[in-house]
Amino acid sequence: MCGIVGYVGKKQSAEIIRDGLCRLEYRGYDSAGIAAVSGGVIDVRRSVGKLHLLTELLKTKPLAGTTGIGHTRWATHGKPSEENAHPHTDCSGKIVVVHNGIIENYQELKKSLSDAGHRFKSETDTEVIAHLVEKEYHGDLLAAVKSALKQVRGAYALGIICADEPFRIIAARQDAPLIVGVGDGENFIASDVPALLPYTRSMIFLMEGDFVDLTPTAVTVYDRSGAVVKRVPETITWNAVQAEKGGYKHFMLKEIFEQPQTIQDTFRGRLYPDDGEICLDGVQFNAQLISSLSKIYIVACGTSYHAGLVGKFLFENLAGIPTEVDIASEFRYRDPVLDETCLTIVISQSGETADTLAALRLAKQRKSPVLGICNAVGSTVSREADHVLYTHCGPEIGVASTKAFTGQLTAIYLLALDLANRRKRIDKSVFKQLLTEFWKVPLGIQEILKKSDDIEALAKEYFHNKDFLFLGRNLNYPIALEGALKLKEISYIHAEGYAAGEMKHGPIALIDENMPIMVIATQGKVYDKIVSNIEEAKARGGTIIAIATEGDTAIKTKSRHQIYVPPVNELFSPILNVIPLQLFAYYVAVSLGCDVDQPRNLAKSVTVE
Ligand code: M6R
Image (cartoon, rainbow, N blue to C red; front, top):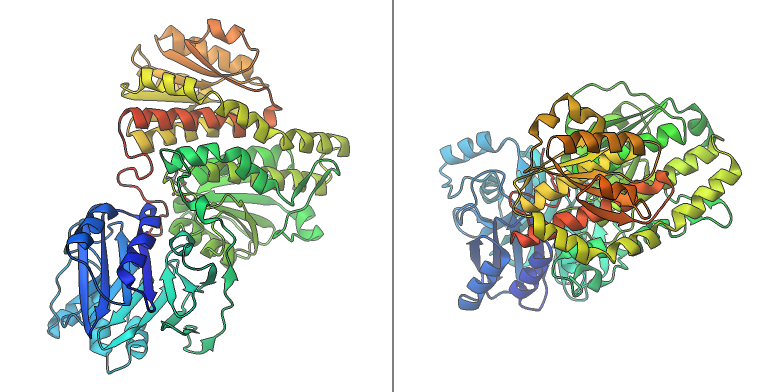
């Protein structure tokens, strides 16, 4: 979950790498460092903390060299410290490594290298790679890296340079993302696309087991067997501005406000309400599979898991397919009953979440067809799944997922509606009507966003509270979970999401006058039930903030505050109802002075188990 950038060309590398690392800081920000080769010597700058500290260091101690590698770290082995910051060097200081991933057998390697006289300077697993390459080096860095990696078990994306070969970077990937940027007289490596957007749009997505030899004028890719392979560069069409804050105070706020657009992007080329049609590119289920599906497993983590919980309602109620939803880290160890009649859907914004990938691989092993719902184009999930439904939300930089969540929901709705139609579970005219209502969801979101000032005022009234409860029922129960997750991850306030009907079985004991309770109480078949739950909470002194449907005046007598959302078919209500919860969490975190885009202890992409 760290970020890597490398440059080999004619320009000074440090500034390009530093700039690229800033665009990858969402992947980790415990420490950062850059190494560059100049005059046959490698120099390294490292600092603990965020990138701006490295930037300051480079001002006082500039780094020369037209070949370099850099890293922004999310600590796994060893505390955040300068010694543990990447890049890491061998004994001679001639071989330098940046790494994302985990070397599982590093302790045994470290012992045998230490016994052979290698001196270690850090507590990291990564440093063993520098020393292994040193041991294997006989004048050819590529050959040394290949031999070294044969001894390594684990996950890695690596960039390696050598003082004796100053115009060369060797990179490798196994179970961690790495791309190559192809330039004119210069070439790059990076963990993710945004790092390289200002420099090139021609990018190669490496496959598992690939090695790459980069010089200013050539990129040579080898597969794990050592054979040269042709990996055709893809042209990335993302606008560079998409990866910037675009006038908003934080990426998270920008991403919340982008949602009317990003949902339309997920619709694009797929949803045709006038023709009553859905066309899903990337999903080629044959008629046999569609009619014989016995079960769907949805597997994901965090926010993506919450999207999956909404999916369960849709696949069961619309398409009539029994559906289970699993947290990926549980699924992989619980020996699920899977076969070729079960469809496994893995949901992942990044497409790199280690547990989700493991679940995908388990499902494939057991012959279950796998569909990935992914945002990151070219990510591992998208390459390994049998079918891919991209959410097309553009890069999500804020660690707290917002637009990716509504993109995932949108993709799930499209799929569930399509399956319902193709399995003939839904009348044509009802299907067409639903598509028309679905099409209008972005307009509803626009209306809610206009209320952001009111939600900010509410957040300012409540940001001192220490605990929050979020309640919802039915389709909106997962939205209560998501509201609580958003609040806790960016404001560090304790928040619990509950199915409102379950409250009386325990959590009601928590309620007193210090407990604000956010209740999703929009119109629908469980409206009366949730109003009863509001009464139960009020009777214990709880302060109710209701998310309610415009025109519901009765709710005013039941709740202290109301956030109104436009009326919408209940089926689509989760996509609207999450928006005020995202805004509320955002404004509470801002009122508390929290680092909204990079909350403590978190990383955007969790590529370790
Ligand atoms: O990239 P993924 O969707 O696989 O990531 C899953 C979770 O790590 C992610 O949703 C996490 O919970 C976010 N911090 C939520 O805002």
